[in-house]
Length: 81
Image 1 (spheres, one colour):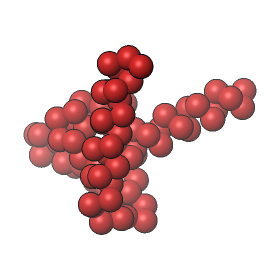
Image 2: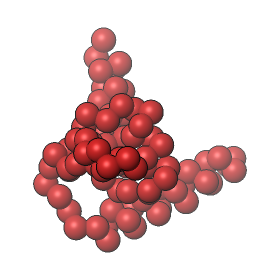
Image 3: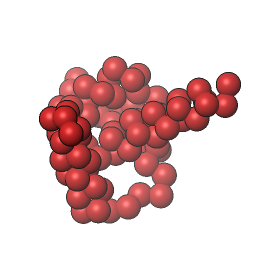
Image 4: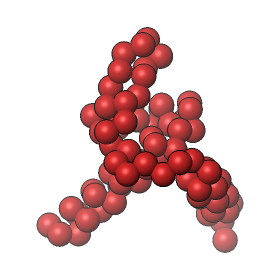
């Protein structure tokens, strides 16, 4: 397998560990993210670019969940059209 695939597997393992360690939240999309300049924004309303870079910076599992949810929603929408 490729190095990219191996890196992906490692990242997913870390993500799963982080998911298990963090307290489960029934509806993470109601959570609020505080930007570096102090503004509060609902995670569900963050633009994709902002979401991605905030996750890269923080490794916050709530942001990761939102990204995964958006990817699956887009994939399902693509499949159904």
